[in-house]
Amino acid sequence: MKKTNYNNVFREGNDYYTKSLIKPAKSVYGEKIIGEYREWVGKRSKLGAALHKNLRTFAFKKESTVLYLGASSGTTCSHLSDIVVNGMIFGVDLAPRIFYKFIELSKERKNLFPILADANHMEEYEFIPKCDVIFQDIAQKDQVRIFINNCEKFLKNDGIAYLSVKSRSIDVTKKPMHIFEAVKNKLKEKFIIIEERGLQPYEKDHELFVVKKKN
Image (cartoon, rainbow, N blue to C red):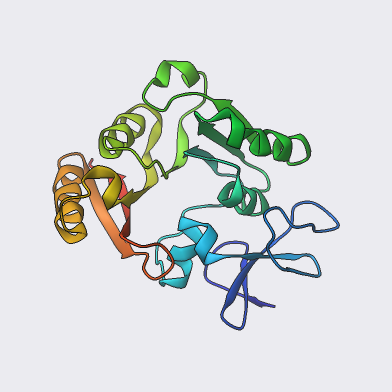
């Protein structure tokens, strides 16, 4: 298992792994286990897909405070839990039938904090601290507005934020490239875009934007 340029992320062949916070390591979503390492499957995680697409900006550190919008069952957050070993990951999701798996994960992964809430209503989780990193994976038409609002409220001035855009959730009638260009222009009003990555073939019609606040 070889170290990578990504904090607490390792590589074996073409596959990425995180060193499991829980000992002995056990599978969370059916991923392969090699000793104490869990495979980070690109087709099951937008951030995992971005690693395979040579993501340059990886802001997750051992002591980071992270807000994850659209945490779902906790696939990506389980890997972030392995990475942010001394930090906190606040996972927000609205769908209780899926989110219960995240809640179960949080019982043994003490750096995970589940919040059953609507990311449109930030007052439901306004108790969380300012965050070093925000990651959003919400397939809604107004996903860009949700992202901007949450970043303005919760992202530290020197923080980094990731927006995974599913073009067909915004407008199925338009070409993805046109959707992504419109998203980019909207983000530029508030942020500096420091990186942009297409997630094909791992995720169809998805683009990952990495931004920071303007000074």
